[in-house]
Amino acid sequence: MPYLTGVGSLMMLLGLYLGGTAFKWSLIIGEDAMTEYGLFTTIHLAFADVKGYTVNQNFIGIIPVGKNKATIKLYGYIAQREELADWVATNFTMLDIPGQQAYGQISYIDENHVLAQDRKLEKLEQAHKVTTILNTLAGVLVCWAFIYPKPYQWASFGCLLLPILALIPYYYYHGIIKLDDTQSNTYPVLLGALLVTPLGLMIRVLKDFNLLAHTHIWTPTCVFAALFMAALYLNRRAINTKNKQGLITGTFTTVVVMAYGYGACVLYNCYFDESVPGQYRVVVLEKIHSSSIANNSYNLNMAPWGPVKRSEEYQVEAELYDDITVGDTVNLYLKEGRLHAPWVEIRK
Image 1 (cartoon, rainbow, N blue to C red):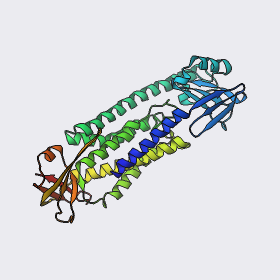
Image 2 (image 1 turned 120 degrees about the vertical axis):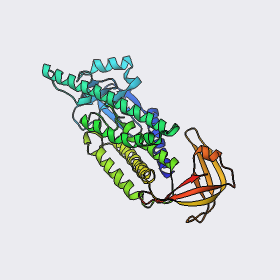
Image 3 (image 1 turned 90 degrees about the vertical axis):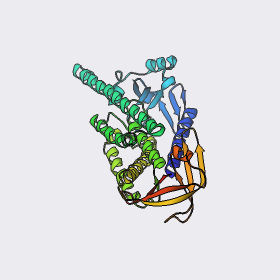
Image 4 (image 1 turned 45 degrees about the horizontal axis):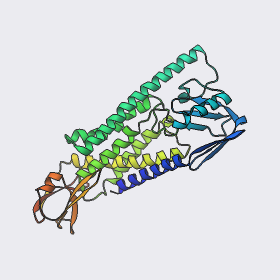
């Protein structure tokens, strides 16, 4: 639950940031300059300092002379306004051919360059198809893990392995595939396959396994998360670390990767546990059902037993929950755990 709360809070802050940006954004065009107002930034660009403009399917970029000034980017509906597009084309020089923005500006065009450009655009289109397939598969796996995780090993291990498999195209395309590209919306991204699927895995293991102690889980979780984080950030061309968006992406990535490590370690600790369990007969004190749009939770409040000296709540399957009444005695099995993190399993 602390992980869910942290991720939910982070997503809420991200939503507020994007909503605030959309609400605050405006573009003022004067006689000799233009000014773009964002949520936290203001970009003022004199017409005399404009080198030209670039165009792709996502935005029109007003490019300044030199690198010490920021580019003004006109996205979506604003870029599709005919009067604005005509004004930009009339007053400035076009610097590129369509699609060139994804690979940097060029100063001249010859036959060899056009052929090279075509190959790059073909590779970009191919990368878009690959990321679409992987991100769609990630969505299917998460829905499968939430709604009907049977056979269990396919649903859970699919969520575990997909982010690792997604690292192959992430490196194969040499920086064309990004972890996040919300600033330009030009490159294909693997946000779903690399960062959403781990959340599905973590939530799945939280619902399935009742750990008594996490002491032996945190060290392997941190090691696993550090290795996966290193795998993501060693591909420096795929991640922007130089602005506020990079900070937001890095923070979100860190939280999700820790959740991924936790889910992987709990799954290994419990699913592959072959220890001989200790059996206890425990009285059910209370049944607790909580329901929301995204989740149904079925808990049993159990009387003290064995090493547990006070009543505790344990999550169970809906079928077992419906088959038990308050005052019933159930079998509780205490297992050692593959990573020596003890956990319990409840049966009637």
